[in-house]
Image 1 (tube, one colour):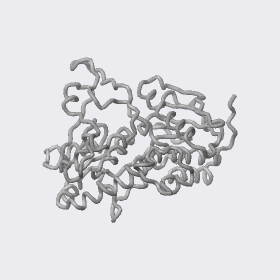
Image 2: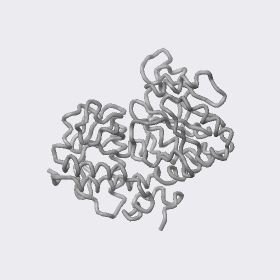
Image 3: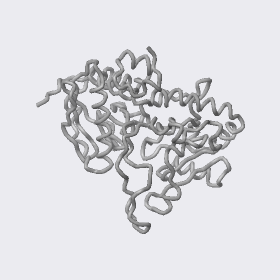
Image 4: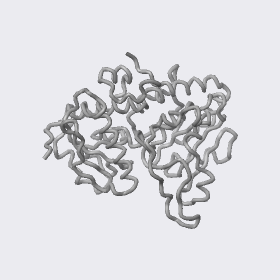
Length: 363
């Protein structure tokens, strides 16, 4: 047996043996977390999954006899946290219910904030991403592997003079790979616009640097800042993710912490540009910056080397296409498929269970 994306991308019930064959090396962050507990901290105790230290955006849950239970949830009535929590719970439930392999009984907690533990490094928590020094955190797939709670169609606002933020529409049950059929913008690489695309709010130094480097409006860039409080400007500047995929070069920037856009950009048949990152997601160790298997282009955090690297690929379109092909091979058609996420969740359950020092009690 071998994994074929067109046949198996939604095969949520792969066995552990099939998961290992299809997605070799994907579990590095889980293995790291397990090793850290064993060598430096000791096993996970019941008090480690307590969520009393945080007021919002956190859920305590349990898997018991293959059933998923919510033990406690804090602050998830917030619209954003609500959709994020549902996205995580749906993924966990799907990973359990789709597979016939044994599922361990575990109790755990997860954060749906961009920053799982913004004020310290003491919490043993499942997180979307982590900083290198926050070794107690376990990295899980983020909510938008299930859906992103904003419809790519018309935005819903009151009026141009109102300062209230744009209200997102109901989420669509889309995975990243859903966007990229021939009818939704994934055109032949040679037919793509020979430009670098970026849209986003100016939230940090790296985004400010990108805007500054492209401020002269060079012929190779289509980069614009989004002001989410200015509805009329937003309507003229915002573009859908399928439209991003019509560009030959796509650039990822970290946001408040990590940014969920990366996996969507990697699903384009385009060349991803990433600055040197601080926040680690579950698939970051699979990024290859050079050599025959190069699957993205690495630039400095201040984007000082962006223009020469763009120009080099404009001058060598076959090299650009090779990187885009590798990105599709490694991410869109392998590690970012819904099947891969189901496998990752079950590996996370198993890894967590191996260092859990208590037996979950249903009542």
